[in-house]
Length: 132
Image 1 (cartoon, rainbow, N blue to C red):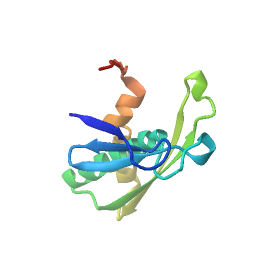
Image 2: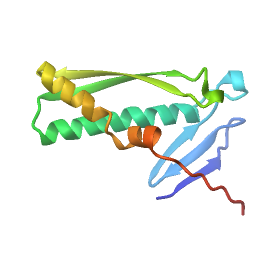
Image 3: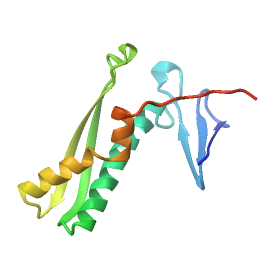
């Protein structure tokens, strides 16, 4: 898997991100000197968790034939202690469908087993940077 990042033609810090056949952008807020023209890297980190939880829950519900119509996820970030190594994401799931309380509990538990949740909470990530 390869992700290519290039300086965008517009903006001070705006970046063009190419992932397979997809192109997205990243920037920083005006408070940090950017143009706020795209999500910042923290937004993508947080969104990866939300997307993974939603996909994991939907796949599980489909496989178990649970009556889940769709899922909405809100994430609130508390990065006030990020400099101390603590980054808090408060996740609120809204499961829509004719689900029993037991099925909702089952799906909530599955949400915490998504691969990104596991990476963020249980894995050690090694980042090796080189220059060319």
